[in-house]
Image 1 (cartoon, rainbow, N blue to C red):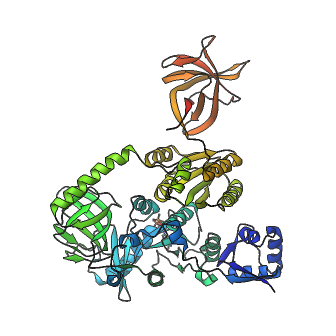
Image 2: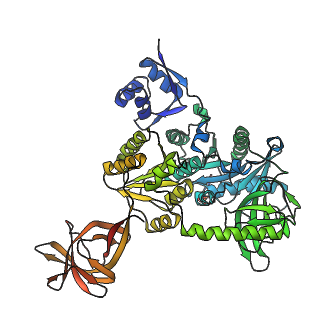
Length: 589
Ligand code: GDP
């Protein structure tokens, strides 16, 4: 009798091998004899996997859908939290709100324009002239709301503020270009937010379009196309020729049907600010997306730190309306200040109540700024014990795929203990703003292996309180994480900058190898302290300041304005113009 084994709709060869405790090479050979060519990192669908495991005496059964998973991790789509207090009997289906994500130049803007011009303009003399950051289209008598600010920066910014504008993500992938870094990023963002995804396979009109290649790439990222037996809808479109748009809209309705997007039109009026600006003559103009209840002209609204009585409500076509129900985007006037995109808004009973809420928020913002809660590796164990976290979210960046794969494998092993590890995004390349944004929105830690963080990303990480850890040796990294998972990590050491200097010239000194002739521009340099050598934004050396001389004498420290000779421990590749940053490590905050 064969042993039953649960398998998902698609599985990576490596994982499959692990699951049945066989060598991946052996598995690949078995696949080849069955006419399937696959590498260790590629995914195969359930049917293929079932045939192969049968050869080892297993009987594959479809994996039970893990309904509990969402509850366990505590993260529920944000809009569901928004209606948590509503009476279930009052909930009604509302139009889905869709956002379009994807790699630059894959056609996000063109697709939004194509949908708008084919669907909206049809019934509108002259089409829509104003853009308010969102619009609606009708398909089969049902409405779909599109957010007109493509790109995952907007999406993540919203989530970082605790809002979630979109119910469905349409991932645009150019059929001639395939999955690219920002495609992967977008997938990670959507997955982290638990928003269902479908794919618009764009530029299908291009002669070098290769839909099958893109589908293969998607399957490898666990987005197995529906025509391959998976659950991800992939719709071929051409934004340029305006083909496939109808199918795309139908697809969106199908995805909406499978996720029961509801609200109470008579409930508490809440929603999200899509965009806002100050108009010289009209005052504050804001686009609000109503997510529950019905907004009416004359309502008193609090949005972030702004409040006011709504003087006028216009729909996305610029037509005045009296009311706007769930999923309706509206342009409003009457707020006293410009709220930020992603701020939540609510209707309150009186101006007095509005002022009180704003005052409370201002107060809270002050204290929050003073004690920003950081999700750091050091705090992880304490957070788990306090019941605030059950797993550690990670974003992993490495220099090359060859180091990324073993890191992910090692980390996944560590995550098998009582505290889970979830890798939201693993990619090669330096750490950029988008990584920090995703980390901030998902309370994740960024692990960099042999990569650097862009200057902007470092700054943003600092501001957002994102823990960014760089490693050069795999076991150091796994050791740190293992310790953190066991609550044994030493308290964080912080860098205290002592001073900075500029390298003016480089000369050879027999005793120390090469020495940098520097001028101290700030603070002091200290012998025995740590140094980092920057060339532009790149860090070219990190280590100890081994020798420090002023004229012919060895000195312990040297201050601003003075020139000195600096030697770096086992490092000679110094260049004029390099910047020296001298620091010490201090324990604790
Ligand atoms: P975005 O950066 O993702 O918003 O991409 P855009 O919408 O700006 O499109 C990038 C480029 O691809 C533009 O030159 C478009 O004209 C072109 N493009 C977009 N969609 C299509 C398509 O379906 N077919 C072809 N051939 N070109 C397209």
